[in-house]
Image (cartoon, rainbow, N blue to C red):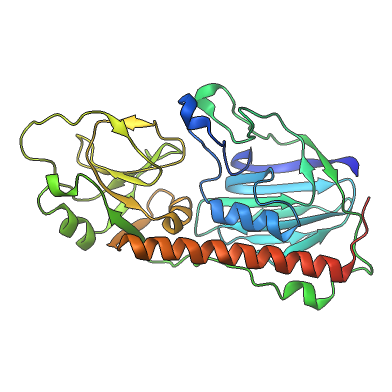
Length: 328
C-alpha cells in the first residue's frame, strides 16, 4: 500500500466525498444519508475492486477533473457524461487506467444530476458516525474545492502492459437508462392512500415535474394532488426513504435519504428500492410518471438488482485475478 494524492483541477456546482451512508444512525435520530444514486455509487466502486460502500467522489453539475500523482484505476458512473483522460475519450461504466500526471475530466452531462468517480483504494477523509457521507445540517459538509489534494491509499500499481486486455471490458455491468422523455417511477401504495379518494388514479394518470426547490431531503414535484377530506389530524409517524408525501401545499414530495425521520402528512405511496436510484438522478425540470406495482414485484426487482451487483463483483474479481494487477 502507498499514499499519494489526487489534485482536483475543476469541480462542478457541488463536489463532495460520498459513500452509501450511515448504518444504524437512524436509531440516534440522524438520517442515513449517502449517495442519492446508490446503484451508480456501488457499481463504480465494484468496477475498481473496492467494496461497494467505499468512499468515492460525487459531483453535481458542471465539470469534475483531477490529476493523480501515480497511475490510478478509476471508474465513472452515474449520469451520462463525456469522460476524457489526457484529452482522449474513454468509456463510462468501466475501469479506466489514468496515468500519473494525466488529467481525467468529466463533462457534458445532459441527462441526470450526479456523477460518481471511484478510485481503486481508500480515499482519506473524515467520518461522521462511521460514514463519509455529508450532512450539512450537522455541519459535516464534505465539500471538495478546486485545488484540493485528496490523499489516496492504494494497492494498485498498474497492469502488465500499457493498456488493458480487451477481456477486462467484457463485464456484466448493469447500466441504467436515462431516457429523454418522462422517467417511469415504480411505486407501491402507502398506508394513507385510502384516506384520499381518487389519489391513486390521479397520480398514475399525471405527469409531475421536479421543481428547483428540491434537495437531498426530498424531491418537490409540481403536478396535481388531492388532500384528505375533513380536518382529522394525522399523528406524527416514521417515514422511510422514498415515501410519497402530500403536504398542505399543492405538491407531491418524494422523500430522500436526508429526510426527517418522522412527519405528520399523508403517505400515499413508496417509490420502490430500484426506483430510488433513478430518482437520485432527477434534477429540476425532469418529468416523472408513477406506475403502481405490487409489493411482490417490487421485492423481485430489488432481488434481481442485488444479484446483478453480486455477479458484477464476482466478474471483476475474476478479471483482476486473470490480469494479475501489480500490488503495492
